[in-house]
Length: 287
Ligand code: PLP
Image 1: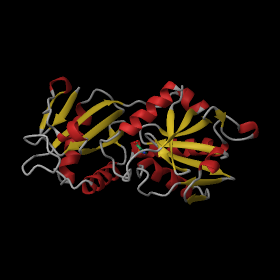
Image 2: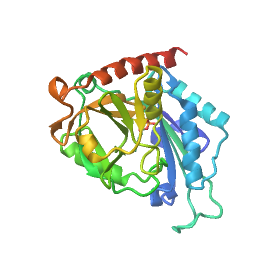
Image 3: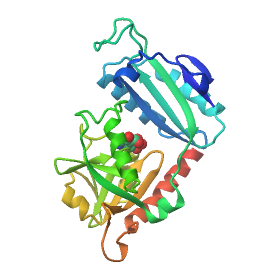
Image 4: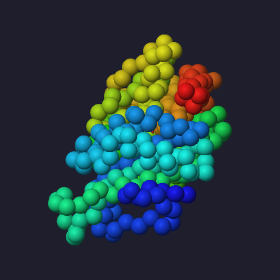
């Protein structure tokens, strides 16, 4: 499959970067992952807006105007062999002439994109829900920026995988931040609760979609900090990301989520949200 590297389209196997690249040495860069459904990038403007926010946050000038990004993305999406894709986009501060922390005086950013087939949720994940475990959120103070420094997320996901879980949920000072690669919502007495977009979580594009759908369908929802205790006693626990959409988490740290006949199963509000989200995606594709 082709990739894009610094102005050139070439096979991924031929792409080369310098070992002095600051992305490699310091994780000095940002990224986006844009899912593509039926060859249409999902909420492209929202992803490019978030990219701009991340670039501003690390003081890296945007190497391309929006029209150029749209053009690069269009070329890659059109030449990739899959209808549903996951388009990865990364920008680093490039390579200096030596290993030195301050920004190099003359360096050009490294711009890299490649498309892969989209990993969609399995029927089992949709119908039975996911297993999750909690881990301490040991990340830095700007989790709202989508930077390359993902080691805490990697360790959290590996711990979850070793425990037979699909996702790790990060807790900081007794409060829910987000998943290792997702946002987390709870449902309590028919109300959807979402943590606020602060420095402890990434502002998810799907997070916005879920709140828009809740508003459209008249479901009460509140944005406020969610304590660990509230999460552990929630009626429903939800996970959102743009590549996998909205999924129920039905087991948390080995215990079933929810009570009574819904314990350990996707709850009634998730079943409605699944239908709304499917309709929303179909509309996006047909638009
Ligand atoms: N939080 C983290 C840490 C992520 O890596 C992601 C990315 O998928 C999300 C949240 C969800 O964001 P989005 O809905 O834009 O995919």
